[in-house]
Length: 319
Image 1 (cartoon, helix red, strand yellow):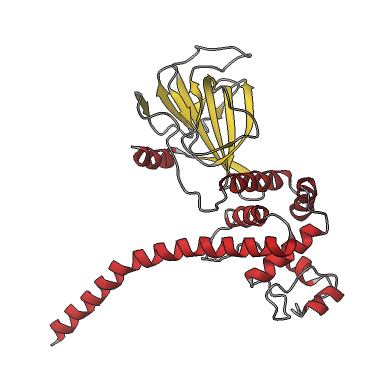
Image 2 (cartoon, one colour; image 1 turned 180 degrees about the vertical axis):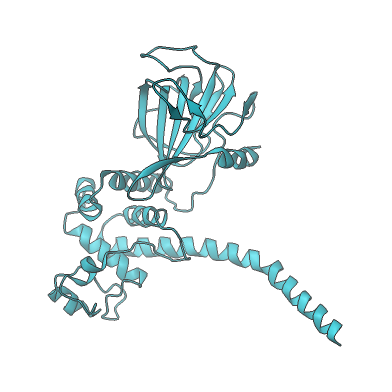
């Protein structure tokens, strides 16, 4: 009898494991739809384009240590939401307004609850509307909210990507050099470098022949192009996950590539070269390769991290 119960238990556990993944996958898809519906609803009420709310939400989700499955991840500071004198954190909108707070009722229950997604988005929309509805007005509102240039820059870039593709579920990736060509790489992040003083290598070197196409790995916006003493001809892309992607030692750029351009995974940026370690035009001081670096922003600072595990994953995805 005990053995039969044991088998039944294992069978039920197997069923839970079997059906668990598809249910989770469907819920992930559903949460994107729910978010988009909330963004569009807030746009209809406020006349502020939905992609700015989506970009703020995405930015804050990617600076938090845990997502916790929240529909909306924007966290309005308590003193801004409730007002400086509202020490009891009373949620009635009239009381919040009396104390100079910004919290708004977005779902019609007469309470302004920071844990409610509709209330949060309505509050953010009202805050932005105080400054105006133009792109420049929104940038000013974001700066006054975050008090940080990089935060504003990241949100504006992400909004531009969302607007371009009319979607927030953008998870495709690609390998940074064409896998149709010969190439090789290994983990080189953290290795010592001597040119320009003792420093660590902040990326992975992907060795390939001159002219091998270099591609965008992600959805993002080109923030920077031009010559760098160490990196030669390089490109910097800020993606929608608060990560800056650095491409160095390029031979040159694709003809239509420019700063401010929105890119997607697989877009050709230029080609592999051996430029750098000197003034503009210096080339040939090392074998041709792409230096690929990744830098994470947590809302306070930005730092380099090892791209190698991600490159291995994207390489498999691209083949």
